[in-house]
Image (cartoon, rainbow over all chains, first blue to last red; front, side, top):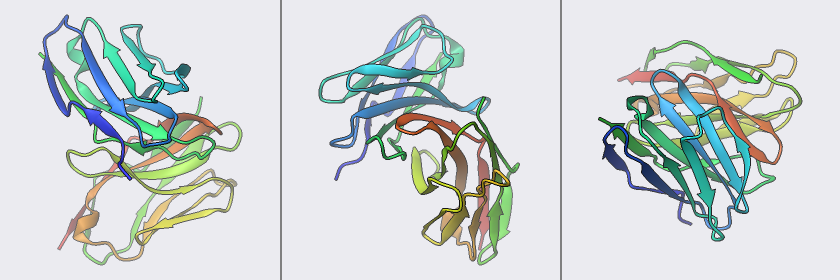
Length: 112
Length: 113
């Protein structure tokens, strides 16, 4: 079956702009979580959605937001982009109560 | 809070060598433990998991045992191949049923032919 799909794969944005990233989970998976990966900070949890509700949130500013749709697809939005937001953004889906998460290939965001 | 500590990299080995990548964790309760692998330009692939003490996860020749007494989950492989070159991440899930993974800093592994 199809894995986790993230679009787009690459993005270049200018400081101050906003961006929306998309994630389609594995069919049947209702939990979607987002992570930011940078060389300096490593992998950091952003938030998790389950059945359209944010269930868990990491320590990121309010400029980072997300949502989940009734078909479990999820989007994350970053407003007022800063240079430090340049990162690989990874989406993962899971089927609670199974603990493992399956990741997409990520969206590489570059802010210039 | 919960945390994961991995051995510092990079690690360079010759083909067919024995591999160990150390991982220790700090957590309240009984987390599930994972190893993920990341190839260049890719996302994370789940390599193996263990959900309770003394469980051994295994996949593709890799193994790791959940040791509660030493809070460790070391990754081992008896004979590495060039294709095993990648970055390896140890991770724990903070609580059952809710997806929040805490990752180690990653260990870059290079295997020379």
